[in-house]
Length: 85
Image (tube, rainbow, N blue to C red; front, side, top):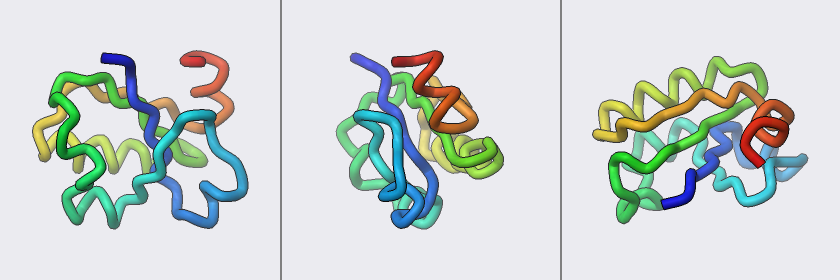
């Protein structure tokens, strides 16, 4: 399965610009169970980013507690676009 890119910024930040193909899952959605990821195998590579890397690091902990095992902190959208697209 291809990696999934997750923008963990708030909706208004996502609307101001994001990585092509990224899905928007702010921390409150992750803490509510992230139904968008219900059918995603737990070993799928998830590349998370925010503005500075802090929220994506916190989001990694939430996803790890949900059983996801292949997590990458992509730091911010520019870094993700340069390294993963």
